[in-house]
Length: 182
Image: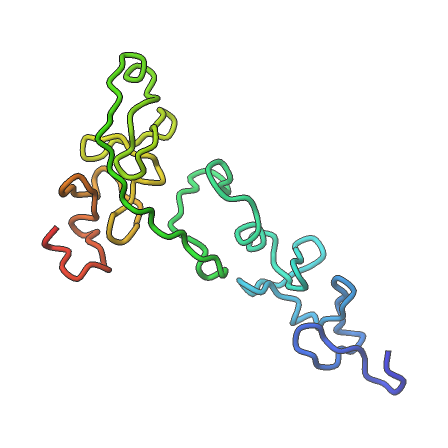
């Protein structure tokens, strides 16, 4: 602590923090008005703060940026969300290259239990729990995306051309120069 008046320096803005406006977080002094989530800028307190590498977040933003990812880690009922986390500094996955297969397994066991049908995008087996039917073929949920822009599709928002699936109608790819030729 300084000898003459003043106080410690704020860990966010580096200005002097006086005792009346001081909040302690992770051994650092902060102004109460600087004690905000780095992403959504919500005011924080000791019950809502999460710290990662000297950066402070609210628990919701921290979970989105550093929490587990994948199926089953939603946040409540109806968790379908098209947010890929770009605003949190997360780089979106690149689209998988197209690897068509011409080896569908037509065994009775495979037809009954859904274990041997092959995904037209990646060529791997498509099991019942992850199967989506589109353009008359079974797809993995993660492979059921537009071949041009990589957006997730639904059976009602796709068109098929030469064995590949694309956005259609009002969902035409914004990245394709001539989407109407699909």
